Each structure stands twice: as structure tokens, then as C-alpha cells.
Image (cartoon, rainbow, N blue to C red; front, side, top):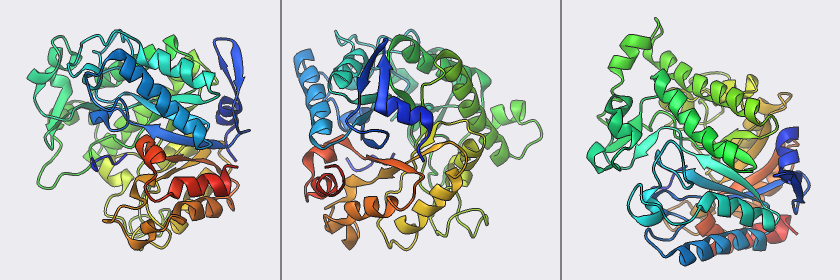
Length: 397
């Protein structure tokens, strides 16, 4: 999920068409098709608009965000509730998020996740809870974390890289802890799905190496480092899926990976792209395997490129992903880069309000595509050149 800018599976279709919340079913505005948006809380990107707002203002902004989804004809909101090893609910495992009050660990005086679920359901919206598994902080200083933060108590769990802090995916105790933190929310709230974004091992940073030497020496098991890292992420996904579905068998578990698994020049099974980042190699996220093994309920690749973009053409990647999920029972949603529409720094195609609408027209030719999710909520609301309005008029009547 790049925020530096300051058929569809039965389980997911059921969650969208008729979600049971605490024994009470509510109907979605659409039967089976996901029409969604991401709402990011990290760095206050989408909500709340700033840390430290009065509770009444935070609540009002949240309701406005949900009302915007309804107004645009959407039926699903994917809300980031664990942006950086913290929580937007009274977690048993992690501190309150600093993006609420401005001070990590400070009780905001209300329950944002509980309120979000209730208000979404009141509007007929599905609310998927979005968790970032490994990010600890957007800085590298353990001393800035809240007193008692798990990462301060267990600094050996962390790796500083690129000016940020991460939990080390190579440690079994980290994997278990992260799953426990997520399952705390799953147990306590009638959320409609669990959602991971594209951040697994961090994106490459020029001149830096992710320092997991000690973990590799202890747990490498004879694998080369890249294969070991992929195994670590595979285990996170596999174990998360198993534990989640033991607790709530019908709850969808989805991942939104970087849009290119591998280029065909690297692997003949890959896409006809020339992307500089490949999730398999650079993020150690073997999304294709997760689909084939059915460890995920749905996948939502971030196809944030225009039709005709040479290095990563939307019209090339869409059928590639459709073919990957074919026959697996894993749902396919398409992540759409609405934030690029009207951005003068983007290619000319993104200055055309009809570009995104053409994406949906193209996707409609592939029966595996079960819907679209737009990044992000502020762009759904602001819609500077009318691209979202065009999508709604052409496809969401």
C-alpha cells in the first residue's frame, strides 16, 4: 500500500451479501460484488484527519467516511486498525495508536473499532479490519515507543531498517505474538474480514540490508536466505489462516499484495512485465503459492498502473491474476490506484477521468474478478477530476 504521497469465493461473497454480526444479519447493497475502499490510519492519511482531535470530532469524521462510501455506491470499507504494532481498540497485547491521541498508549476515551463496525453495519457496509503485521514504527528509535510496548520489552524482536522499525519475521515468537494481537480483535468484534496489506519484509532500501543474521543462523535450517525469508512469511499466512478459521470458520482472510508477483523474464510463470520490484523476490511474499494452497480467502493485488503502462500494464496484469486464481476457489478483487487520478506527476492516462472506469470495463470480461477496492478514502471523497464519480455512474448504478 503505497502511501508515500502524503468467481468470487463463497466465503467472501457471503460476507458481502449477508453478513452475520452478533447473530443479526444485514444486507449489503450488492449481491456478491465487492465495491470497496481502503481507509488508512497510519500517519493520519485518511482518518482521523489529525491526532489529538476531540472524541466528538473523531466520531464525526468516521461517520462521514462511512457515509462517503455509501454515497459513492460502495459496500465495503477496509479500515486500518493496527497501523504500526498498535491498536485502534483496547487491545490486550498492544498500546493504543498514537494516530488517535498523538501519544502512543494514551486511551482515546472511546472504542474506534467497535464504533466503526457498528456504524458500518448500520449503513449496510461490510467492515474488514486491516492489520499491518510487521511494522513497528515509522522511525528507528525504540525509546520513542510507549513505555511497556512489547518491542521495548523485547528489543531483540526488532530490526531497524531504512529509518523504520520492524518486527523480525524470522522469529517464531514474533509470528505467534502478531497472530495473537490480531486474533484479539477477531474474538471481540463482529468484523467482516481480516485483511493484510503488501508490507511483509520491507521494500528494498538502496545501500541497506535487512539485518536478520542472528535469526537466520538460528532458524535457517539449511535454506538459502531468500527461501528462508519466504518460508517465514508463508508460515505467517498459513498459521494466521488456520488459527483464524478455527475461531471463525467463515470469516474471510485476504491479502493485498504488490501487483507484480514475478516478471516472466525472472520466472516463466510470471507476468509479462518489467517491474523493478517483484513481491516474491523483494518482499519475500509468495502470493501465488498462498492462492494455490488456499491459505487465503481472497487476494486483492494492487494494480496501480494505467492501461498501456509499459513496465506493468493493467491490461496484462489483470488476466494474469485471473488465471492464477482460476479453479482455486480463492476470490479475486482488484486494488485500484484512485490516488493517481489527476495527479500531474503521473502519466497522461491518469489525467483522463475515464481511465479507472475503463479498468472496471476490462475487468468485467473476467469472471474471476469479484470486485474492486479503491485507494484510498480521502480520494474517494475528494475525487479531484471526477474519476470516482465516473466509476459510480458507469458501473455502480
